[in-house]
Every structure is written in structure tokens, then in C-alpha cells.
Amino acid sequence: DIVLTQSPLSLPVTPGEPASISCRSSQSLLQSNGKTCLHWYLQRPGQSPQLMIYLASNRASGVPDRISGSGSGTDFTLKITRVEAEDVGIYYCMQVLQTPFTFGGGTKVEIK
Amino acid sequence: QVQLVQSGAEVKKPGTSVKVSCRASGYTFTDYYMHWVRQAPGQGLEWMGRIYVKSGGTDYAQKFQGRVTMTRDTSISTAYMELTNLRSDDTAVYFCARGGERLGDYWGQGPLVTVSS
Image (cartoon, rainbow over all chains, first blue to last red; front, side):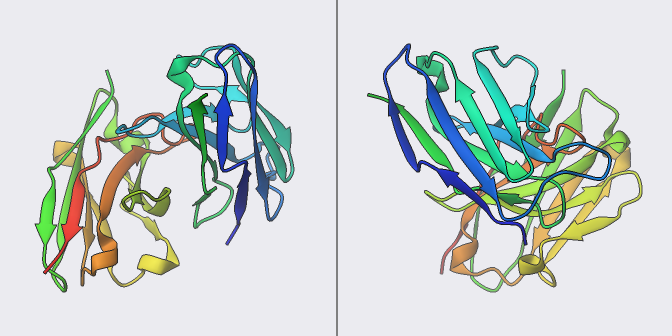
């Protein structure tokens, strides 16, 4: 199975400041068709997860442009240019290259 | 608008089974996969498997092979996940999520299944 390792586990942030989350895969997530099979989700407290970024760098519908995804191969990053209160929650990366699909362990973003 | 509405919370005894439903609306049900993801209390997300709604074909995580069955009824746009031989560590919230290139663009509300004697 593909293992995804996220860091940090916890990320206290000051509103208006940037934040960055890393997700590393045990093998390349590049598909033969050129797509990179890595998604990012945010789970706010008490809610279902929400798709934020799909295929490594594409913003899902309604996601503000201060949130972005980048990376290729085995190293991926989710960045928030200026953190707002609505960004609080647990961020998960997920690989969809091969079954079983797997999630990273999660990064908890909280306001300082 | 797209919605996934799941059945309600359940309390089950060890050794029994649970069947969770996920009713879809607002899109063509047969055009997408349906995935099932669970989350134990205070823990992360775990992918259980998926069903290709059009054909009924399934992929299950090895961990659940032999205990999980995913089905669908296209006449009522509803997907089901049944887990048998329940144990206490199956206590979790069980989500359905629409599949496709943007896997998880829509999620159900996720009922809590509690396994307790």
C-alpha cells in the first residue's frame, strides 16, 4: 500500500500569516496519463471532509485562491497565503493512484 | 444541487451487521463511483472501498475483504455499505463520497455506528 506522511502534525497559525503543509508519498503518484493522483481535504470540526485541491494543484469549486497545492512525484505541499478563521481544521492528503486509496495522518491547523 | 443523504446513527452488538445507505440526488447516479470512508472517534480517515455504480463492480480495501459488501439500487439512486461480524473497533463515522476525477467533491453527513455489548 502507498503510505502518505504529513507534516507537521499540528500547525498553530496567526491570522493573516502564511501556512504550509507537507505530504510525502512512499512512491510516485504520477499516473501514466500525466495526471498526479493526490487530493487535499479539509475537515472542519464536526463536519464531513471537504475537497480543497484535486490532482495536486487544482482548486475545487468555491476554494479561495489564497489556498494552493503544488508538488509532483512524491512531494506535495498545500499552502495558505493568509490564514483566516475558516481555514481551521484538519487537512488530509489522499492518494488515488492505486487501490487501496490511502490518506495521510492529517495536519491540525489552529489559530494561535 | 448535489446531495448525499445517509441513514441515521446505529448502535449494534458485537458479531452483528450494519447496513448504511447513501441516497444521491442532483446528478446522474450511474455516472460516478461511490466511495466509503470511515473515521473512528478522534482518528483519521480510512478508505474502505468503492463501487462503480453503473456496473456494480467493487474494489475493497484488503482490511475489510470478507466483511464488507457495497451495493447499489439505481432505481432509487441509493448506495449501500454493509459490514458484518462487527467488533468494538468498528465504532466509527461512516461516510459516503462521490467518486470521479474530483473524488470527494460531495460527501454524506456520516452516521455514527457504535458497536457495544
